[in-house]
Length: 285
Image (cartoon, rainbow, N blue to C red):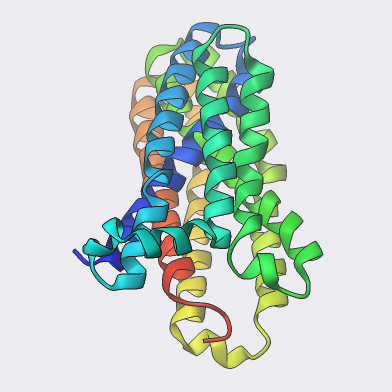
């Protein structure tokens, strides 16, 4: 594995952990009254994800040094490590690390929801401190669009594991009520992911020929996966969830769990594509 490939893997896994932890914090805020025992389990998962993400974020600076050197020996080079520490990526990593540690404390400790929400806010804002959005002339527009994009995406992914547990373990009528409430909320929020993404693409892409190059092709692939995700979400809302509350709860449980797993894997694939995009390419390439 090359340092570049290791950096993509680290970023992908780190942001999967971030999305999971932030999403759990938001899900438990909204659904703790309906699912007290389930949300307690979800908080443990979110806390573990936050700690895992923090460990991965700690690798960012040495991996940046390794990429500068073109080999992993750069992780031990003091000069390259100092250069990596002064990069904008290091500042974003510090904010992200702080957010993840607060998330871990807020999710694993009792009655610490405000701490978790503060950590979620820091984690969601961290990406605005590095990359093309941090230096772009339209930064004041790009930053809030990126925050909306990340925040809603995290809520979506972070909700999937507790929703899957709810489908598997709760009574059919309870699970159906929770899924219906989540679907109604998501029907308003999730389209904002696409709108924010389109807004960022409009501001970043100055020439449509970019869509024929790697940056644009990966961007188009992300939108294609998002379309698949919307199809699965619609299937869950209009077919599987009503079936859970009606005549075929057992079959509906299986279908819902498979569909939720497919959503999780597709969002994870989007995070890998995003990590690849931000590591190797820009709209100006």
